[in-house]
Amino acid sequence: MSSGKILAVDIGGTKIALGVAGREEFRRTGKLDVVEKFPVPEPRTPDEVVPVIFEVGQRLLQGAELEVVGISIGGPLDHERGLVINFPHLPGWKNLPLVSILADTFGVPAQLDNDANLGALAEYWWRNREKQDPFLYLTLSTGIGGGVIVDGKLLHGLASGGGEVGHITVQTDGPLCDCGNRGCLERMASGTNIARRAREILTTYPEKGKRLRELVGGNVEQIRAETILTGYKEGEEVATEVWLEMIRYIAIGLGTLIHVISPERIVLGGGVSLAGDDLLIPLRRKLREHVHYIPVDQVDIRVASLGHDSALIGAATMVVESL
Ligand SMILES: [Zn+2]
Image (tube, rainbow, N blue to C red; front, top):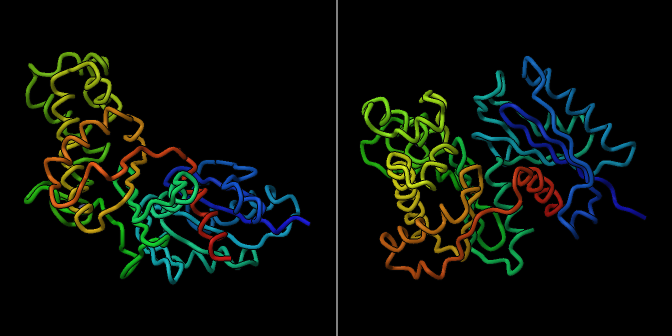
């Protein structure tokens, strides 16, 4: 007889993903049977979104017995109380008891964690055969987030604030971050912010960055992190300056973390990690400058391999682990 089903839900700023798997099958393989993705239904309030999640979930379950729901969302939350503190991308998702709402809707227990923690859990359980631990996961994307696993468990800490690596200070008196601090890693090195930095340079110095301008058809506003990577690969001057500056800040942030948890493995996920060796090689070089007390060359640093579904797989992993 097959086991009951688990439902994983990943709520993003623009898209929602749902996945279903049999509990025991997932425990063996880490694979979801079906995944469906759809845009967040307008006007994107909980009242509008929750019924759509229920409808899609029921359809994916095809009448099978559901045991538990695992939920992933970005932004600050209270893991213990199952509360979304604030999800600024969606209106009305503030102090929202999402766990009890979805548990009532589906009539089964539910659990909640943030997308970076769940990405960490997924990469730890399904792409880390030797269970190297302590384990550190960073997502380098429009923002920077992270998850820390010690002795096989995610570190949540006070107010579920563990692993908020994007808000480590890497530049004293740097520019103001959304969190209220100055010079946060996210503010200095996220995909959004390196694009902003390149635009600033090109606007201030009209004689610079001829090739980088060509890559966006002369419209500097179109510069994205991907444009900078392309420029860096070609050896373009401004792109190289901005890319290596990003790596320097990531190395300062990571160096701090390495001194605290001395990880056996670090996995870098998110869009910027798709750069692969263009990220890893200069980063390892820079880390050697900042970390002397710990044998940094023995830290296994690699890019993530689960891609866009890592938070969804992590949500399923979280609930399977707790059953
Ligand atoms: Zn910050």
